[in-house]
Image 1 (cartoon, rainbow, N blue to C red):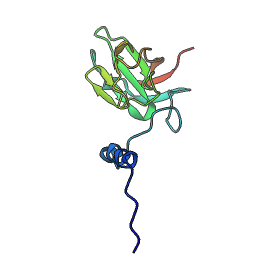
Image 2: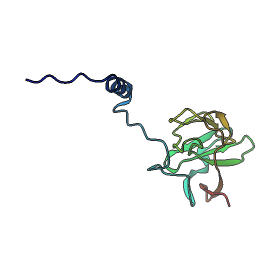
Image 3: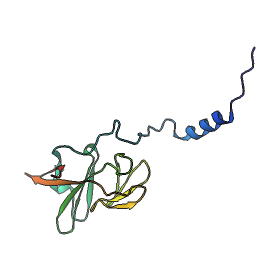
Image 4: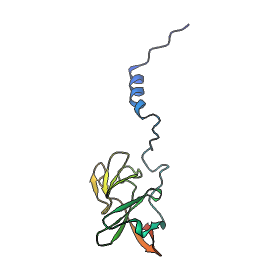
Length: 138
């Protein structure tokens, strides 16, 4: 029976570093395999889904819609401007990116917390027959 060579320090440390995230199904950052912001019109849902002073995240379309107290509706792409990860968490009117913790204001698109430094990409939003439709701005 032959003896196995001892694991190197590098091998052990690499295994320890990767063990906590193994099996969590984390999404890699970056544009590869990540659906981007809308490139054409997308139907989001009834206008009534977004009350004044609130926001709603449409994960499947990478869009957030907010409504101001005055009734103004705004939409932004929820692709993080730092590493192009899709943002999947909305807390009140704060969007939180799962990749590196960037935070954005869903009502203005502005960065609230780095590492992102550029605001979210604004989208045009209109209401047609009671349904909100987001599309790229021209």
